[in-house]
Length: 86
Image (tube, rainbow, N blue to C red; front, side, top):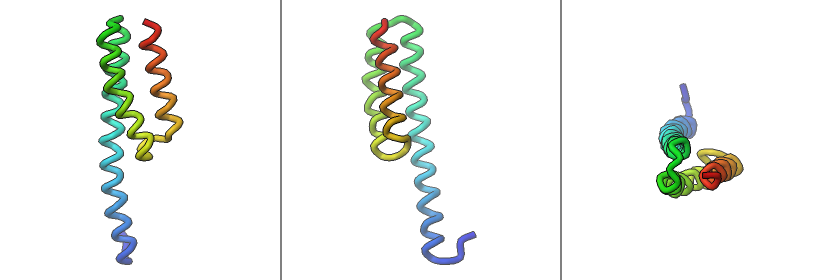
């Protein structure tokens, strides 16, 4: 356990960041799954709508540092490729 005042603050901050990151990652996974489900259903319109909802969430997570920027870019690219293949 932290004993210095600054270490205690750092501990509180890391807990808050972890909770925020876990929630953001979960939201991304849910949106990616919805895009993939729409692609498997071969519904062009539904998959495009799901992709439009997923791209901003993934990009924001990349900018905020929840996931790496290149990881976010790769996810967006792969999802877009799958939707465009329909």
